[in-house]
Image 1 (spheres, rainbow, N blue to C red):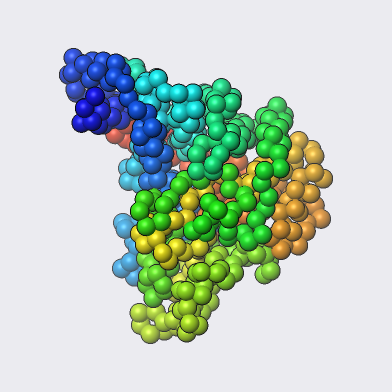
Image 2: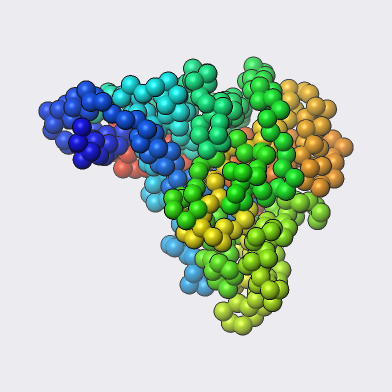
Length: 501
C-alpha cells in the first residue's frame, strides 16, 4: 500500500468523525476498500495513537486548562499587557466561557480525533494486544469527552463516512467504557507504564464507576453501592506492585520512568528528541528571569495554598539536578527567588523577584510581574531542551488509594478510609487526621493531585464546582458541562447543544 494513500485516508476519516464530508461517495468507497484489503503494519498506527494524546493532554491550553483553570487551584492572571489574550483564560476561571471558546473547542475535537485514530486501528486486523491497547486509548479519550461535554460522537470502525456519527450520552459512554475495559483487560500487557496496561485499565474502571452516578445527574450525584464496591475491588486487584514514593516529586522528574514507585500509566517523552509539551508545566508559570526563562503566567490561589501544613512535603522542596542548577525548587514557589548560585533574582524593573500570594483574574492588568504563587510540579529537565524527558503522568498509585478511600467513605467504612488517607499523609510528612469527612477528603485530593488535571472532575463529584472561590462568584448549573462546539452542532444532527449555551 502506498503511504500517501494511507495518510489521505486517515485525514479523511478523522474529519469524518464529526460529520459527513463533501468527498465523493465513490472515492470514499474506493479508499476504504483499498485500505481494508491491504496488509497494514499496525505498529506505526498504534504509535501514532499514543502520540495523538500529547497535544490534548500535555499542552497548557487543552484538557489540562479545562480541568484546572475552571477550578480553585489555577489562575491565568492578566499582567499589564501580558496574558490577557482577550480573556480566554479569565473566562475559564470565572465560569463565563461560551460555545466559541477556542481552547475548549480544540480540546473536544482533538480528544475525538485521538479516539478515532485508536479505533481505526481495529479495521486492520491487529493482534490481540495491539487491539486491546487501541481500545484502551479510545475508551480513555471517550471518558474525558463524556466528563467534559456529556456527549460523545462515535463511529464503529469501518463504518461509512456518509453516515453522521452516533452520539453517546455520558451514561452510555460509562457503560461502553466499562464493557470495553472488562473485555480487553486480559489482552493488555502488564507493563511498562508508558503502554496501556492491565493496571491502567483498572484505574480507568475505578474512575468510571466513581463518576458514573455523577454523569447521570451532575447537580445531585448518586453513588450506587455496586459501583463503590467495584472501585474498591479494582484497587485491591493491583496487589503490592506500587508504593508511595519516598520523594513526592520523583513521580514527575525527568527520569520518572526509572525512579517512580507510584506511576501506573504515563505518556512517554524522550528527552532531546521526541516529546509532548510537558515542559509547559514549568514554562507556563516561571518568570522571565528564572532558569529556564518562563512565560510568567499561571499561578495557584492563596486559599488553596493555605490548605497545606508548613511541613507537608508536597508544598515544595529543593530537588537535586534542578535547584542546584537553576535555583528552582519543586512544588510551590512563593517569596524571594534565587538562581543556582544562591543569588537573589530581580524582575524586569530591578525589584526583588519575590512571588506574592495576592492575585486576581482582573481585566485591568493590575497584577504585577511577581503576583501569584507559582507551581513547578514537574522538576525541570535541563538536558532535554524543548523535548523534555519527564513522562507525562496520567495515573498513579496515590490516586488509586484516594479513590479507594472515597468509595469506602461513601460506603460507611469511615475508619478504613481514614487509615488510607493517613497512610498518604504520613508518607508526605503531614500530620494524621483524627476523623475524615467528604470535605476533608476533597482537600486531601487537592493536596495530593494539585495541577495534575483532575480538579474540575473532583469538585463536581463533591458538589463544590458551582460555589464561589477567589476570583469567581457562584455559577449556574449549566457550567457543569462545557458547550458543544457550535460548528459540530451545525454539521451533526445527532448532537444537541448543552443547556445554557
